[in-house]
Structures are given as structure tokens and as C-alpha cells.
Length: 394
Image (cartoon, rainbow, N blue to C red; front, side, top):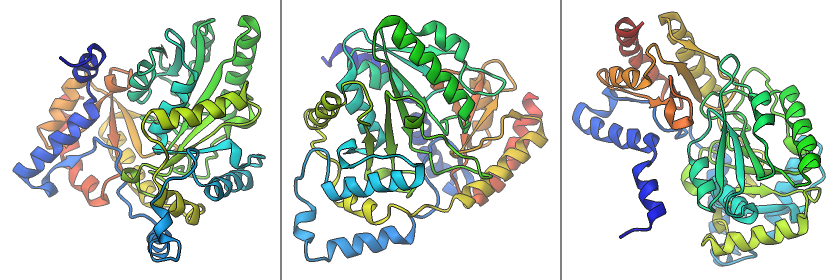
């Protein structure tokens, strides 16, 4: 018999992944060109050329035999320095290699930091809609995920409810901006108000409350929108970053944590995170891709391709009568369902070989997520199907 905790995990396994698998089955039946799979946030633009060049250079270089070996649990010292220097250059911070831990993607980094921080019963607050795996990452270490209900007007965090839900058991707050699934970027005003609330509550309860910023979409923004760098607003901030979307390499599982020296008990937190990295079984981040991202630290994927998709899909759906906030970043539309039960919307779309994800996966029923990180032609070809869905439901 499997572990009791795993029984629940299996039962509530990701609807996103389930839709992705369904898409593969449908493609085998109808042909991939006739299935419009908007379920998974899998980058659709090629990795930048610098990445391929870096791989070739590294594996053919004089030190290639050492590239595949063990290193410090935090990662290669020179890679961590390169990451720190890049952050400092872009955001006016003052990090060094000691603040950086290379991780197995952002997901690995979040598990490392929750393993580091959480005692059984500690609470982690997040803002709906949110990436559903946050619940699993929290319960992995016997923490309790506390949801703040959505602000349906703007999808900026509901800060009044947030303040009410902070307790003496609150150990961490996790934010994701640009947001999955809405594409909303949390404004500087929002961040300042959030930080002030957390500072006040730390004093009230005499506790440390850590702000954990999950940032796989930081570079995917449109129309000159700027994403605030949260360590500049709240001392107890820890950043989890992934190169998956920036460089179109999600399967390579490479990212990092930033743990500033200003964080409470920073020396112990950094030491414990290194131990957590090892004992969780990661041991260290992938060695080759540590070297690769260091050489590609300033490279970016073609964000304009996602912007073209965003404009076409958003404008088309709004013209059909669907309701949606225009995303400022990431590559998702979060569309209000024409029916109270968004599963009716999902099932109607499926009749036209369109796969979308129900909002309940993100703690926000009544909406659906549409990932527009697909070929432009896929969006064009899906529009007649969306039109028929609109005629049926609106």
C-alpha cells in the first residue's frame, strides 16, 4: 500500500497534466494539426542561438570531462557569481555568489526553501488564482496552504483579506508575478502595501514571515511593463527563478534561489537550504546547464512571438463576447466562463478539439486558463471552434 499522503496526491493529480495527456491521445486520433492544445505552458519559440553555441563550446572544451562531475551543493562558484552580477546589473542589488543557490528549476528551488523553513503546521499564504502545485509543495513538509480569495476586478492581490489571514503560524507568503494563470504583473504599489502589512504583522506576532517570490516568467512581459524586484521592498524576501521560459528549456530543469544576507537568520537559512538541496535528492543542479546558462545569462527568447499570439487570441476572444483581463506578462489568458461551472466551458471546447484548463486547478472556479505558447497558426485555426463555443454558451 502506498503512503497515505500519496493517496491524496494521486487522487488530486494535476488537471493540467491530465489535459496535456488527453491532447496527445486526441492528436493520434484526429491528427496533431486538428487539435488545439492550450493546456500546458510549454514554450513554443526556439531557444536562443547563444544556448546551442554554449553547449557546443562547453562539451568540446578542454574542461569537458569535469563538466559532468560533482560540485558544491550550491553550484559552481563562478556560475553563481555570474548570476549575482547579472541581477545586480539589472536591478541595482548587491548580491554575491554566497546569496545564490543553483537549483533544479524553480520547482526544485521552492521545495528546497519550504524544506528549509517549514515546521509541521506552519502556514504558507498564497493569492488565488495560483499555481496549483503550491499546495503540494507546502504539504510535502506538513505545512498548511492558506488561500486569499481572488480580486476579480484586477487580479491584483486582495490585501484586505491577506492582512486578516496572517496569523502567528504564518511562516511564508508565496507570490508569482507575472502570474500564472492570469498574466497579471503585481504593481509596485501592491508590493509596497503588501510589504508594509508583513512588516506590521512580524512586529505584532514577534515572528519572521518570509516572502517567497516564484519568478519563472519575469522576462516575459509586454508593452514596456516592469516587474518590481521584491528584495528591494521587503528584507525577508527569497527569490526562486527558473530559466525554463526565458531560454525555452523547461525540460533541462535549471534555476536558482536568491537568499539575501538581509533575510532573518540568513546564515542558517543559506546553510540549511544547501543541506535541503542535498537531502531532497537533487544533490546539485544539472552541471552542464549551470555552465550553459552562465554563458547565456543575457540571452532571451523571442518574446515578440508570444506578444503576437497574445494580441490575436485576446482580441479575437473579446470580439466573440468572452471576458478576460489582458495579460501584461507570461503566456496565459484567464478567461471568465460564460457558465458558472467552467467544466461546461471546457467540455464544449473539447467538442471542437480545443483543450483548455479549468480555473478550479488554480483555486479560482468559474474561469479557464488558455496557454497561448503555441504556433500562431494553431491560434488562427482554433478561432472558428472558439466562435462555435461562444455561440453555444454566450
